[in-house]
Image 1 (cartoon, one colour):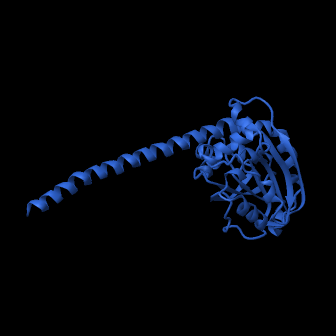
Image 2: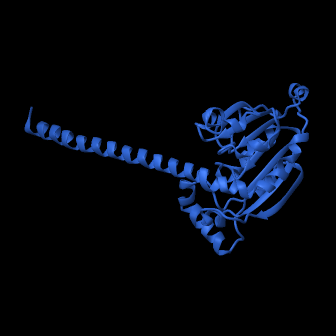
Image 3: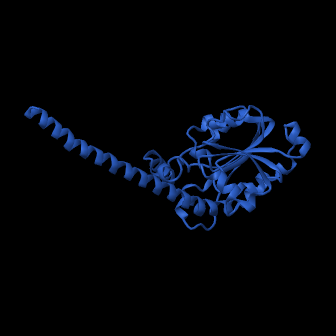
Length: 265
């Protein structure tokens, strides 16, 4: 082997080892970062989102009250006195307490551990009145597993902000709903254009700082224009501003304005 061949071999050996070390180190950092983000978001769900659920309790009771009188489009479920509800962004399952006994439930969420949490977790006893039909990993922008016109009600609460495409998600909601089915929503809105808080929402969203730490949430997302776009009828909503004690008031300040209402397929 010539001197030049040995030099090339040594170079590859030397820098190949360095490359391997860099790859391993980068992978370790990426894994640690991913774990940190996951833990941070879980803490956020169990903390602020749970507190926020308490602030919206009165509104949710009123929003979900009509579900008790729903009659399913599905003949079998109708005979059994049950309805089918699909919820996008289930989080910790707070909304399930408002659903009628025997509800056939389809959960759509990015959390791969949600099924285990709802069925076998420490709080599973709170969900025994629900029949879990299906768990779908996703954000609702593609519900190809769900037949058209097969769901009696679709629910989103503080979830549309985290979808890859609000337009596609609302379109899918409209598609899967049965005729006369209801879309029930409670979604946060951006502050007034030109306001200081509105400017902060834009900055935190555009720089990806907020989406990275809070499940993809887009603070400047306004779902209203999409809900009015896809041919729903009998649309009713109102604007509300959440107030009350939370342990992290800056979160509430950035997501205090909401739209709450319903739309019919």
